[in-house]
Structures are given as C-alpha cells and as structure tokens.
Amino acid sequence: MPSIDTPAIQVRGAVKQFGSLQALAGVDLEIRQGEFFGLLGPNGAGKTTLISGLAGLQRLTAGSIQVMGHDVIADYREARRALGVVPQELVFDPFFSVRELLRIQSGYFGIRKNDDWIDELLASLDLTTKADTNMRQLSGGMKRRVLVAQALVHKPPVIVLDEPTAGVDVELRQTLWAFIRKLNEAGHTIVLTTHYLEEAEELCGRIAMLKAGRVVALDSTPNLLSRVSHHALKLRVAGLSSLPASLAARDAVLQAGGLEIPFASHSQVEGLLATVREAGAEILEVEIAKPDLEQAFIEIMEGEGA
Amino acid sequence: MSTAFLTLLYKEMLRFWKVSFQTVAAPVLSSVLYLMIFGHVLEGRLQPFEGVSYTSFLIPGLVMMSVLQNAFANSSSSLIQSKINGNIIFVLLPPISYREFYAAYVLASIVRGLVVGFGVWLASLFFSWSGVAHPLWALAFVLMGAAILGSLGLVAGIWADKFDQLGAFQNFLIMPLTMLSGVFYSINSLPVFWQQVSHINPFFFMIDGFRYGIFGQSDASPWLSLAIVGCAWLALTVLSLQMLRRGYKLRG
Ligand SMILES: Nc1ncnc2c1ncn2[C@@H]1O[C@H](COP(=O)(O)OP(=O)(O)O)[C@@H](O)[C@H]1O
Ligand SMILES: [Mg+2]
Image (cartoon, rainbow over all chains, first blue to last red; front, top):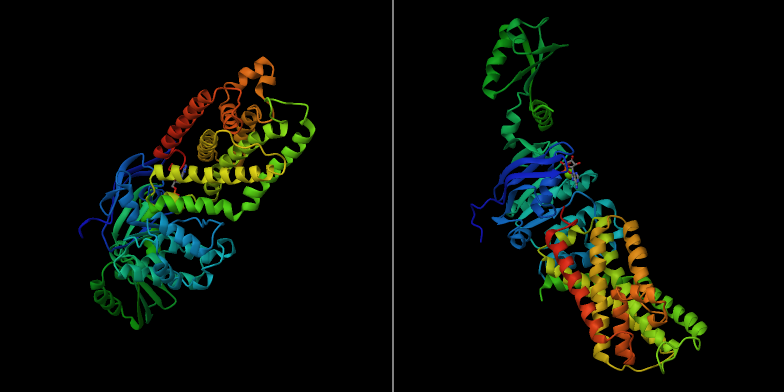
C-alpha cells in the first residue's frame, strides 16, 4: 500500500521522441495526493503525450513515471488500477448502450457487480435516463459525461482529465466541475488540462505550464499570479490635468479622469494613494484589479522565448 | 480465469452477436450458395475420393473455409475498427495483460468461426449427410484452424492502419491461400506444379486434415497435417504475443 507521502504522480526525466520531434523534452513533475493540479500549455505543448505516458498508452523514449508509487511499465496493473483517464478525443464504442459500456469497463478492472456505483455515477452525471440508450444516439455533451463515468468505474484515487470541457456548453461545464470538485474533496487527486484559464484559476491549487515539451512554470496558483505584476490600482480622480513625475515613474496611465497604477504588492497601496493626493488630486473611486491567469500565461510563454 | 479476460471475451462475442445478420447469417448464406451451385454443376463430373459424392466432398471444405474466414474477420475487423474509432483505449487503459488480451480476441474469433461453420454444416444437411469418421481429428483441425486465423486476424488488425491495408491482406493473402487449398477439388487433380504450391500452403493441411476427420480419407497423412498446422499455430501465437507484449502499434 502506498503511504500518505507517496506522490500521486511522479514523473522523472520524461522524454518522448516522435521521429525528429521531441514532444516531451525532459519533464520532471511531482503531484501530491489530494491535489487539484492544472496542466496548462498551448496546443502541441505535450500535455496529451504526458498523459499518454502516464496511462501506459505510449511508452516514453526515456524517463519513468509512477502512479501512487507504481511504475507504469514494470508495475502496470497496480498503476492502471490507481488511475482514471478521461481522454481528450470524444471516442465511444458504437455497439453498446451506456450501461453495457460501464459494466464492461468495470469488468476490465476486475469488478463483476458494480451496478450500485454505476447508478450513482449515472445520477451524478445526469445520465440516468440515458442508461439504456445506445452510444450513437447521445449528444456530444452526453458522450463526454459517459467518458467521465467510464474513467471512474473503478473509483481510482488519481483522476486525469484531458481538456474535458473543450466544446462543452457552459451549463454542463458547471455540472461537471461541481462533480469533479466533489471528487477532489472526497480525497481524489485531480489532474486537469484545459484551455479555459479562468477554469484552472478557479479550480487548481497548483499549476504546471508546459511549452514545447518542457515545464516552464510550476507553482501554486496564487504564486503564479503574483509573479506577474498585474495588480493595478484603478482610480477615478478629479483635479489632475497631467501625470505628475512621481506617478509616471511607476508606469501609471492617466486617461479621461481615470488613473491606473500597476503595483506588485498590496503593501504599496497606501503609499500610492498618498502619492496621488500629494499631487493635488481628489480620489473619487478606488478599485483594485487582480492579475489574471491569462496574463500570467501569456507572459510566461513569451518570456520563455520561442 | 480473470474477470478482465472474461469481460473482454464477452465483449468481443457480444460485438459480433449484435450484428449477427452480417457476421453469421451472411457468410452462411454465401457458403450455401457455393454448395448449391458448385454441387449442382460438378456433381457426377468430379469424384475426388472413392465412395464420396462431390457434394459430400465439398461440404467439409466449405465448412472449414467459413470457419477460417470468419475467425480472421472477427479479430481483424474488431481491432481495426477500434483503432480507427479510437475506442481501443478502453481496453488499453485497464490492467489487462497481453496474454489475456490475446486469449480473449482469439477465443472470440474461434467462437465466431465455429458458429458460422456450424451454421453451414446444418444447412448442408439439406444436401447430403455423410457421418463423421474421426470426430477428434475433425475437432482438432477445426479448432486449430480457427485459432490460427484468429491470431492472423489479430496480427493484421494490429498492423493495418487503414481498412484498405486490411483489405489487401485479405485479398492478396487469405483469399489465394484459401482458394489454393483444395476446398473445391482434391489437389491430386491439379498439375504437378500447383500440387507443389499447395504443399507449402498451411491452409491445404487444415482443410485436408479436417476432411480426414470427416471421411477417414485425405490427400496427405493426418499426422503430417497435424504437425504442420500445429507449427503454424505455434508460430502465429508467438508472433502475436510478441507484438502485444511490445505494444507494437497499440502503445506507440
Ligand atoms: N503519435 C504521434 N506521432 C507524431 N507526433 C505526435 C504524435 N502525438 C503527438 N505528436 C506531436 O507531439 C507534440 C505534442 O502533442 P500533444 O501531446 O498532443 O500536445 P497537447 O496535448 O499539449 O496539445 C505535437 O507537436 C504533436 O504534433
Ligand atoms: Mg492535447
């Protein structure tokens, strides 16, 4: 049995070569049990390749991966039992109904009688009325939910979702996230790749940013956000006709009675307000704009060079 | 036997059974057409074995041909469809060993081959009945033949990236080998050159061995056939298991 200190996922020196293309160029990553972890990066960064390595769908050219302490090659049975994967592509088996598919998937994991859990999954994912419907007759959003259910038939401690909300409507996205969040609160480790940065910002405790097969940033979500100096003090002011030198030095911008001053730490706010008053302005309104992950993402990606 | 193996076997059987009109009824019908047409045209003109009418001679050949073709079709079409559709990942993600994977796909192929073969045999009873001389010999050849073609289908299904490639495998390998195996004639009636060609064709020994089981007569010794068919089976099993163990084409 893996102890509580065993990382949920441990990636060491992962390299994956497709001919001359290096999809993974030496990735090291450790994800602790119980984390809600985000894997971000532009298209082609290697996110899906890393997940494929993790799931044993592709073999690494070099390096090793462990899931709950089990090597995905040498100890593949244990590793795969510990892992549930929701693939990026909307794949399905057209021969079967939803329930048949979930029973079969349970059987592959050695579970014979799983109907109680299957019913619970169907209910949580709002699929109960579709249980006996053939996969072909389901909408894209429903197929996506079946994929989630399929990944969970064996109650894996580690759940990986590869862009699960791509092309999914807003309402379903909310349902899905509520469900995943509940799983995380119940102790499951969640790893997710997404294109919706606000999603990652809202859900993930830690984030790794991947670019051209390398981890270019790895930190807690708040730390990652504070690395970009995009907190800004937004003021509406009266009595200021031009930007005083003391503020211009701080990259402030004055535009039609609105003054925007970027800052790095909240401890600077009082000082900035004082500076504005000293310049003879009257402050009418104060707002603090938070940095967003999108900005952090762009800066980090650009900062790392092409 | 593990639940994973039994589930995969069940899934593979359910898959063809759900479309049994195409996978069972259609091949039975085409064999019956062969039997009607060839039997009618050639009855009385050819008598490959002493004391055996042409139609009776033809039946075991057609039964075996159906078994072989359908065993191949089952594993190969299942795998290529899953690969192209992408749902192959559902059997690659769970902890199923490569041996279990092999056994499930090949056994399901054997079952499909036997179901179709049995259907052809039942239908043939309307035409002729000629007992079974050595049931164990017949069973041995039908099982090994189905296992060989099931494995070959697995190899082809894993190797092929497109339906075209699988089609080529079927048209340029399986079909000629079946047609040159003496389903419709005794190879002794062929020119010497083609007799020699037939003698390097394992399909000939599968069908000839099966005929020995039915009639107690055959072109080659059943022991020789058994040895050759057994070797072919062993070779394909080793090849299939090696491919699966390395994850050839399935785990890039
Ligand atoms: N099977 C494959 N053969 C060749 N190249 C591949 C294969 N799979 C992925 N790639 C390439 O590897 C890189 C990483 O792809 P991927 O992991 O899918 O990125 P992401 O999921 O981050 O969008 C891309 O350049 C992609 O084209
Ligand atoms: Mg991807």
